[in-house]
Amino acid sequence: MPKTYFFLLFGGVFFSCQSQPPAPEKPEVTSRPFRLAGSWVQHNKSMFTVVEIDSDSNGTYTLFLDYRQEIPEYWKPGDVPYSLYKSPIQVRVPEPNRVQIYTQHFRFDYYLDGDTLQEFDKMGLQKKLVRIEPYN
Image 1 (cartoon, helix red, strand yellow):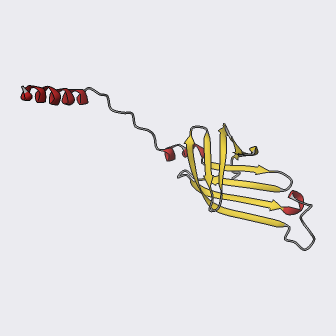
Image 2: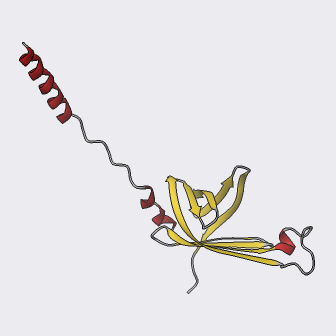
Image 3: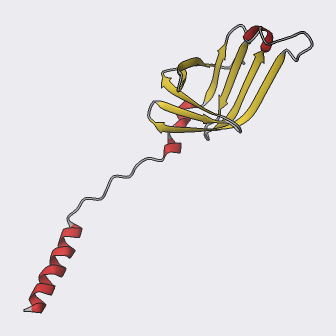
């Protein structure tokens, strides 16, 4: 009698494992940023941002800021009027239309809408970066 139960239990487990379809594989998060490769720019009267994304999800983040225009109430003659921040980046796409850009010191979150990256943070929507084609 115990042999019969063992055979039934072993046979049930064996056949039930074979009848299940394989689980679908999830694509890697890093496989999607290739569509983001290129140059993205934002500018206004006090600053400009250039994000260069390579096909391997790396690139460069450059920010130029004119303090005299951005925060004139804090700028005094004799202070340094400009700031330039340049950093290598890594790009992640945690969801299909969400992009995260990691610099050496900061992380920026964006929504992707066609050729526009809309920055967002806990305060809401911020600046927009638009894709540009280089002039050759």
